[in-house]
Image 1 (cartoon, rainbow, N blue to C red):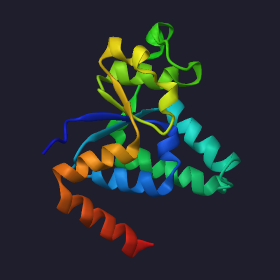
Image 2: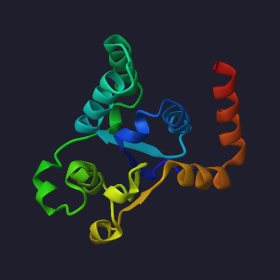
Image 3: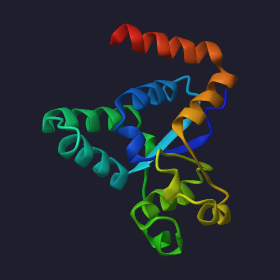
Image 4: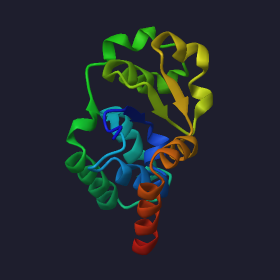
Length: 156
């Protein structure tokens, strides 16, 4: 399995509950990839859930607890010193810096324009829309993806 493939998941993907749920199911053991994020990304998720999506604070806190409990190895730290070297969108430099620090070749984001190729190339990192990554995973493991989609539909 390709469980060692490390991916940074941007906050905009984590706040999209349907996409997030599917991706994190695929990252559970036996995982198809290893998800990563920083405290700053998780803080953005919480702020968006509460202030833009209208989640109750208790629900947003529950999401944070579950993500931390189920993916304790996902937190990336110690990237702050390389922030000045990042040239992508200033609001998302922390995301690229976390990817560089953790050695993640892929950032999943809906905000592709915040990660232009010229800013990513020196680090050999690409940004990809989650839909495109899910298609790649489906091509690798169609039965697993179908099973996860089926279980998501049953729970709804």
